[in-house]
Image 1 (cartoon, rainbow, N blue to C red):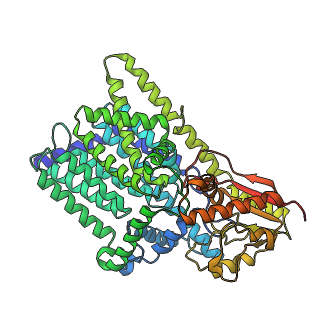
Image 2 (image 1 turned 90 degrees about the horizontal axis):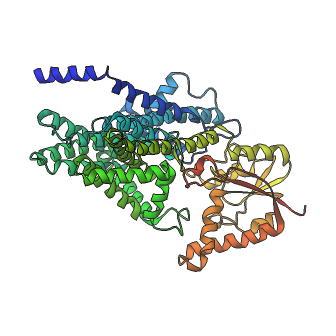
Image 3 (image 1 turned 90 degrees about the vertical axis):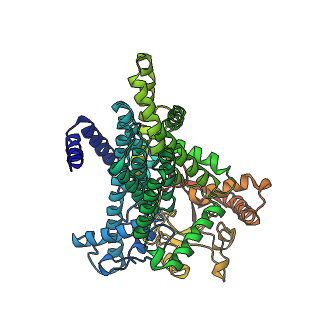
Length: 569
């Protein structure tokens, strides 16, 4: 009882310390940044759907869950179910406060879905800001408060992390829970050694948050590798491993009850996800270098090249000095990096779980430099601060750029507004099935692909001002992107293309001589033939969107849209 009372008193006393206030300030700063531009791409007067392709799908599946009725099976297990369950609850809370449909019909429903997306995005933003707080708390135990603050600031302003913190998706919440798991695992690696009930609590909480992270996105279970690395030198290693692993399994089973409620669907979708990452995502990542090098570039985009290098050097230096907490972080990072590096699907969001780890590495190094007796080390502290600001790329400057893009009109909306004003009564050709990449010249351009093609095609052909055309052969299953028949048969007045449609095909076409996959060759050759005819018969009249270095899932917020007009009426 005395120990428990002392521990409680110590916690209450900590709430009054400057360190707690500084950590809270880091959280508030990170949250404020994430709330700027959080309304990007939500349904508006032009379109019914979000411009993020995953948000409508996640929300639709979340509605298969009804906690009030004891129904926790979404029938969808590409991800764990925790975030889906959260979105189910969020939807009912929004409805309870008057945010549901304000009238009959689809438009009112889609506008309400936009409000559900916004509520889910706020939860994601809080999780992203919470990750900065976790990094601060982790570093405060191991280095100077200057280093802890800088580590938190890296997470607060990392451009890729901030942008994805504004989406109603699983990646940032999963990273937050993973960071909590790492925090508690590393409590078992402190020099003084957590013992007894405190060690048990740390092991249980590390496993709990690893299981919850996996219940959000399956790769979160790799947090247990850090626990293994830090407890192996301990005499109570097997007990702590059993506690952590057991807590992780229980937490995962609770977060994703489909494991035991609907094992057939769970195994089906889990296998699909594993196969999908191993075989690729169409042409999106075709003809790219190894995933190991692509993800280095993704990390440089996600946080900044200098912060990436500094984080790696700092973590390596701490591990070289035989700090067990650094061994834990390094073991987890290497295992996770190998996993995503071997995959064929190379989204930038896959590197987000490495951002807080690298922030810890650089934060620790900065704290050591600040406390060094030789004041010349303060130059390194100043350099790291400039890197956080964005000198050398990434950092706050790039985050401000993306925030401006997410508060300005989206290029797709701008293109649709121009077309409605200048192409009334004319025809507009789409080179692929309309989706999130297309200008919303009619409200349902971004209908999810889960909707049958016949229904999506019907709505497209009902569009007027401009009239939309897409070459569809007698057998719709034989339709192809960039079909030259669009130029020779439909002959629309305008043709619109998006960087989502052209970039990957252009990259494959440029490497056609080395491409062996027959499907890739056919698509690239068709694209080349289409491009020849397009440049012969059409000319560029307008273009929207900034040309900035970007990964596929950062381009969500700033694609390039190009409008071509027929040369001869």
